[in-house]
Image (cartoon, rainbow, N blue to C red):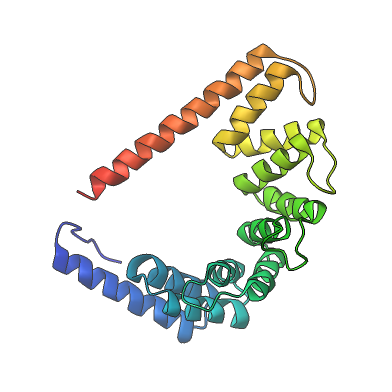
Length: 228
């Protein structure tokens, strides 16, 4: 890649075109699953052409077992972006993604299985959902850690309330900078839910939640400034 003056519209357009050509070559000529993922992201993020993005993700997933491509294709089927909405296909691709090591795939499976509206069984299967969120959490997916923590915090359907596990997973989500995980962890230490009561740690995690919120706000401001 070469240096680009991002204030020069012609240079930017040329750069974007070359990216598309390069990723297309990687996917269809070099037969690279990662290349298909990049091509799908290119069409989805830069071109907003979700139909072509879906084609690239499909090739990456079906032909080359690129797990993140499977997860992104699953999301397209779930929301009907560039493809006909099909929850069954979404489940199939999220499952394939999770089995292939994608944290997003495991999170997607948990989200569907734990939803009465989306689950083909027309009921919330909390235990199964927790298993998938657990797998996502193990792979470093912050939202998965928070979701399973929240489920154990109150109990849900066939999943029994377990404050000790709720605190454990809140801690993991906080380590991964999930603001709600840190806030919940602070509250649990303040109340003594799931373990010792410790106001010093409660304050520590409440402050961490505030720091994450501040960092997120500063990042948004920087991105907005960069668009000017």
